Amino acid sequence: MAALFVALIHYPVIDRNGRVVTSAITSLDLHDIARSARTYGATAFFVAHPVPDQREFAGRVLEHWQTGYGRQFDSRRQEALSLIRVVTTLDDAIVEAKRIAGARPLIVYTSARVSGGIGYAELRTRLERADAEPVMLLFGTGFGMAPAMMERADLALAPVLGPGEYNHLSVRAAAGIILDRLRGH
Amino acid sequence: MAALFVALIHYPVIDRNGRVVTSAITSLDLHDIARSARTYGATAFFVAHPVPDQREFAGRVLEHWQTGYGRQFDSRRQEALSLIRVVTTLDDAIVEAKRIAGARPLIVYTSARVSGGIGYAELRTRLERADAEPVMLLFGTGFGMAPAMMERADLALAPVLGPGEYNHLSVRAAAGIILDRLRGH
Image 1 (cartoon, rainbow over the protein chains, first blue to last red):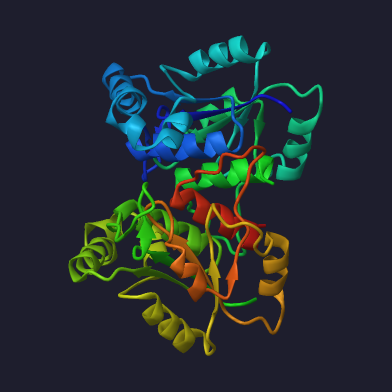
Image 2 (cartoon, each protein chain N blue to C red; image 1 turned 180 degrees about the vertical axis):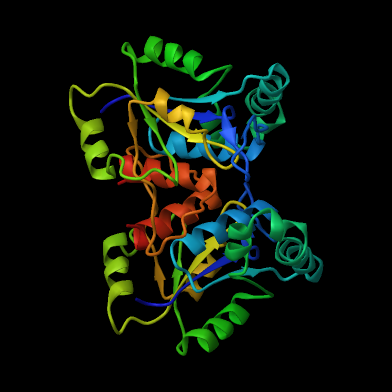
């Protein structure tokens, strides 16, 4: 089974008006996506933010759960949060993933606005191949990643759809659903 | 396609020690699960809480997004939140769902700790039948619903699993994943 990495991107993302912005780190994104990453056997969950204060905030969230009261409170949560690596940029995440997995990961862009894109069954099969290369799934905060991020990716994944056209999922739900489609049992 | 209802239960749920408690309503649960419910074509999303102050809190969250600044800020979010019905008990939710759908819904309990339980493909097929009865999925907050709630349900759904044994998902992620397994495209 291929090494699977998750990366949560806070810059460049777009706001509701389509402007490129830097979003703030949300504590619940770290918790929810770490728990989903752990459930679906991800090797690491990168939280990328360009602002030092924001990375320090993420570090404090992790420290609370890894060393303090939180650890006693819920060891399963600590087990999930231990997957998190706080980094400055996507490049840093790629370097670290390559170090861990021994090969540069295939970078997969996810967005509700992709048209076309690789299908879930196809990417799932690719992940299951014995000689599969590592894969890193990118998730955007705010109103999603800036289009420039798609240029950084090797592939774009088809959007998650229900029976209708509405697909305005939270990043917490979307990450869980996409991991389930790729690795669920 | 059967009418599908979602109900988020705050009492009786268990805490980390297995004690039966009432959990507090979390604003982000309302947002995330409403967006997933809307994406997967749910007819209504019931938020059940026995405490009047907590129901009023939920009402204020909805009012902000439905009438105030929030509505202009993000109309897609308002569209999702309009699915929410704040009720006191599961019984109230069932009465209201029956009124909307014209028949009592089949009550489906979800939990990470179910052993056995109906499979996703089977429930999905059942939902797709032309003569399908309405279905209501119950989701627990805290560390999940108290076992007594299973007695209230007609069926228990198999737990969501990844490649391993860890399945400590957030209720926000679990609700999205389960809706996707039942109604995703």
